[in-house]
Amino acid sequence: MCKTKMAVRASDPTPISTQTRPTQSPRTRPTQSPRPQPTAITTASTSSNPSTSNTINYTTTTTSSTLSNRTSLSSLRDSLSQNPNLYDISEIRTATNNFLSKRHSSSSSSSSSTACWRCNLRNNDTIIFQRKFRRKIVMSQLKEQLSVICRSNHSSVIKLLGASISGDYIYLVYEFIPGANLSNCLRNSKNPNFTVLSTWVSRMQVAADLAYGLDYIHNKTGLNVNLVHNHIKSSSIIVTEPSFNAKICHFGCAQLCGEADENEMMMKKKSKIGEITEVDDDVVESSTSPGSLKGSKELARSNSGAMQFEGVRGYMSPEYQATGIATQKSDVFAFGVVLLELLSGEEPFKYRYDKSRGDFMRTSVLETARAAIVDGDGGGREGRLRRWIDGRLKDSFPVEVAEKMTRVGLDCVEADPDKRPDMGRVAGKISRWYLESRKWAENLRFSDQISVSLAPR
Image 1 (cartoon, helix red, strand yellow):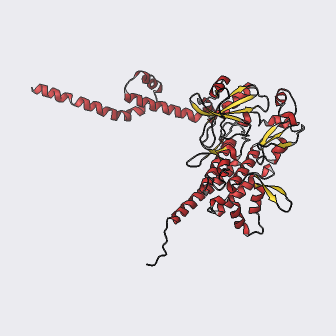
Image 2: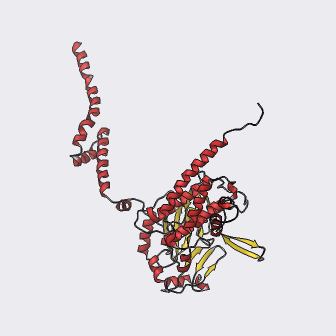
Image 3: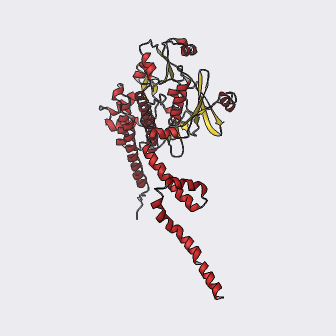
């Protein structure tokens, strides 16, 4: 009996020793694991012990971290599995019911004539835009541009998922983001006195998101490509709830549709440019003849020197109207117009009746902003600025920040493109003023919670 008890006691320490060994193994194994890495990787495939698998994973992560230090950012982007989707036209037809489905009218588009559908494509909630090629593009070049654009990711830019080509048209597939465009948020036709962006902080949030998104497109993609948006306007910005974040639509459209090829446009710069005509849907077409829109197919297939471009009235910079060349500076100009539009709540152009002339006069938000900032009569600069800022904010905003924002907007719409600031500087300034506005709102909220009683005690 004593021997059996001793045998039992002798068997008890064995599990204790096996439990204590894993606690000691990390102390001894790290000294040996860095040297024999190939053996550790081979044992990982054959071993089923959880403790060994954990140590093997640690060694593999260390080797991958050393490799990542040697690899450039561009090569890492190329190795990502975010390949663009080249949809067959049959998939687009099936998703849109052969293009007979109801068009999605609440989303943004470059013009009222741009067809778009919200549909389910490969188990993704997407929105498809139908656009026409502005020039002939080689398929290999189009695939390369599509691959570059689809690898871009930013919280303030709606992601492009892929595209499909059919004849002279390209169908751009974006992820669907629920929300309303900025133009409808600022100006409600059914109730002009109401706006979703009823606080100063909400408008600063939209301005900061828009500035960061455009700065990313211009400077922060890391793709070594000078990207141009060419469709910045209030109706191309989606505002989401509940935090009122802004997202830029139509990213990559200018490159994929042939709108932003500066080399080709510079060759055509000396060619004859026709008059710019205004269309009812606020789209401006530049062409050499009134019937060029109908004959655009022939122009695209031939080597005609006619230059044709599309823009929106009120958002086109002077040099873009003269040359038709979309650049990053023309994007900055359009951003400045949207910023002034966001502060005042007014459209880029507004018609007012002049009693002295007996006719309607067109005034722009650029002119009214300059009149509010420049020194002169009329109750002082602060009074003019308060009258110019959207009255639906109920005069509740930091005046100093509002003046700085207005001046930045005017700097962005300078006639000389070289005088316009870079979007990196603009985004940094607006971010700082956004934080100041948040602090101002918190102090105002704290003061609102103080109750004052005038009753006798």
